[in-house]
Structure formats: structure tokens, C-alpha cells
Image (cartoon, rainbow, N blue to C red; front, side, top):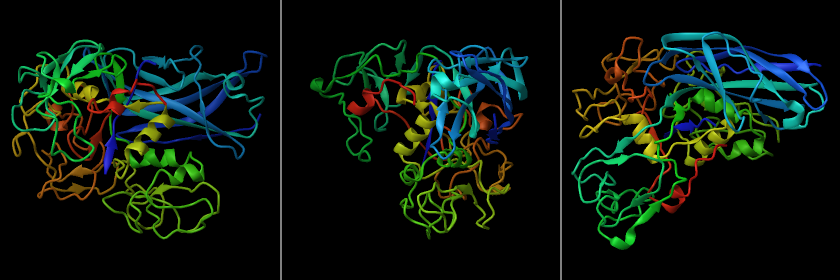
Length: 467
């Protein structure tokens, strides 16, 4: 059961269906197409929508944003991604738009300092439908617009490792010292070996869970590995998802796939020729919601047609009720599932070094540091959730109001993930919210974070490409 952190760099008759995503909480509505220009060679149409989300901010440190992207479907063809044109867009007063360099989406964010809920009406972007997608006209198409809350991580140096000298497998430090390693550029880094100043870990990780041990050894000069310049180190600025991928977001993704594609993205095996299934809770391959995952399909369906997925955590057969768990992080995702979601959304996974930066910020590390900047101190600043109220609702809350993390401990009474961002309130500070230095949520519990590791050839080959 894993969660994913996804990042992104600054890079006629028409049917429109807004996709409502109320995480903590973002919503797109009033989607429409407008100002059709069919001038040969420059054909475009405007996609217009309203967007709102809670707890937005812009400070001198950083800001949040919404990543917005769109898909279209022509007749019974598979869904295709819409490229956003790099000019001709209109940002509502008080906001600014940054179109990614690959045109797969845009960031919309506050233009100046501020804090609180935000509502922006009549956001306008251009779609060059003929040039980008080869459409001659726009008859009989469906357009969906999606949004994901993001956090901007500014450029700058930071540390990896916290100076701990205990037998913690893979703990980063400077070789020749127990001090944390300072990342000061995106340049290449030498890993392991015995040369003072290289980036090492406590040891090679022998005894770690298979597949998680680093392959460089601080005791062996011949084990030095080069982390190349193309591997994203975290020094450069980037955006990252504010919350985990929710079950509602994953359902939206599944419902945009073909039947064959869907069958790769969950545990229940449903081949294209099938017309019924017993284990309709497809993520866990069960006939009931397991570990608070409520993503399901019907018992019966048409052969070869895409399944209709929906949320039904309360198991009453009624889709997408208020207590059906839409705002819970989506567990049971494999690494391949997370990468597929990132591909679909025009994003990419986070690297191991980026994770440390977005959690810790630029400051000197604290020994045994948790993502909220304090040492691990169970019952001190580490207060585990003991239960929940408003089960499965958007308003789901911990029964112990001082809780700031959800860990797999004997006294943790919730079997499965809790609502994304559950510990943050309008008045909570970083520690109470369990938030990172930059305001990213749920980095130290709820579900396992998966990243692109520095400790394998495959990880080190990652070059930060999106989609």
C-alpha cells in the first residue's frame, strides 16, 4: 500500500464535462468552449473554466498552485491529451498562469502575497486543436478538465541526512564525517567509496528489505558510483503535489483508460472479454472495501468496453456518496501505477534527493528529524491518530485533535489511510499540521512514499522527463 509524490518543473456541438476534484479541496466547474477561430493555419478555441481551492497561500518563502490539464474524446476513440497554447491565455485578477514548456498543462497561482481560500472565474486558455491533434472540426467531442493542488519548491541549496550515527540503513552523510551532505547545485555527485567528501550512507544496506538497499558501499573504494548531472538533485525549483493521489483522482484516471489499459492498473483481473466480476473492489481484489479503499466497479458490464469505476467506501452500491472515501489517499498502488498516473497527468515521480529538500527545506538538519522539522518523539511532537470521526467524508477528522501523523503502530486504530491533509486546519502550525517546511502534507506517515532512488543504476538513469 503506497502513495506517490508527483512533481512537475517549469516546464459545432460540443459536450463538456467538468471533473470535480474536492481534495482539501479543489474544484473545477462551469467548463465551456468559447471564441472559436477557424482561420486556416491558426485554428484554436478557448477552454474556459472556474477553479477554487482551500488554504491557498503565497509568502516570501514559496506558494501553492493548481496544476490544470485537459483531455478530449472524439466519438468512441480513446481519450487524448490537450496541449495548452503558450500564449493567448487569460488569468483572472489576482492570479497568474504559467504554461509548462511541454504544453501539457498550466499552473495557476496567486500573483501576490496572500492566504486563504481562493476562487478564480473565467480562466481562459487556448487549444490549437487542428495543429496539435489533427481535428478538422469539433463536432461530437467530450472535453474533461482536471486539477491537482501543487506546492512550489524554490531553487536553492539544502542538506541530505540528519547526522544520525545510529545503525540506520542508508542514512546519507559526508564520507569521512557523520555530517549531513550539502547539495549546492544540479552537478554530478560521487556516491560511496572511501574518498572524503563523497556522498555516502551508513553502509551498503545489507539486511535491508530486498530491492531497497543502495548499491554503493562506503567501505569499498571500487564501489564508487556517479550520480549524473541529468538526475534531478532538488537544487533547481520544482512543483510537487500538495497531497497524496486520492482515490477520486485515481478513479478519474482509470475512467479515462481503455479496457485493456485499465486491467494493468488494479489488482482484480478483468480481461476485455469478461462481462462480470466477483471481486469488484478492484484495487485490493476483494468483494468488500479493504484497508479503506473504496474504488470499485459493478458486478456486470459490457465486454470490451471500459469499466466505469467509482467510489463506494460504505459498500451500499450507491456511487460517490459524501462518505465514500473520495478524499482518502489511494492505497494498493504499485510503482508502475504511480508512474502511469504521472504520465497521464503530464507529471513525473519525485527523486530521493528532492524528497529530502521538499520535506526539510534549506535549514540545518535536526537529529532524528520528522518532516515537520522536529525529532521523532512519540507522545511529544509525534502524536499518532487514535481514530477518526466523519468516516470517509471530506470533513474526516482525528478523534484526538492534537494528532499530526498516521503511523503503523499498535495504538493506531485506523486500518488504512486517512483523509489527505487531515491534520491541517486554518490555525495549525507546521508541527500540528504534520507539514513539511514548504507546506507539503503527509510525508511522514499514512502510506509509504516511493521515490526515484540514487542507489541503483535504474534510478540514476532518470533524467526528469515528464509524461
